[in-house]
Image (tube, rainbow, N blue to C red; front, side, top):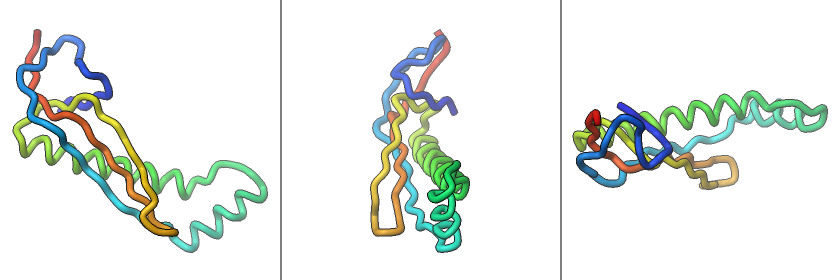
Length: 106
């Protein structure tokens, strides 16, 4: 499945638009990671624990969006975007969304 942030795919043409698809995940922080992050805030540096959490959340959201698109019969998703929101003090949602389409070679 082709997944792009652009509204067109070079060398392809959209023959059918199937509609909005999305995938989301809600993740909670881990107390141990919060302690390490707090220490890193003092001494500086990348907070790897949170980076890993965000990367895993992003991939899970993309996988869920792709599953929804495949269920519609799509072979590509265009105009992909990401959004985040805080769900609780220690939990956040990551949302991936785009337009499911069927493309063919030009």
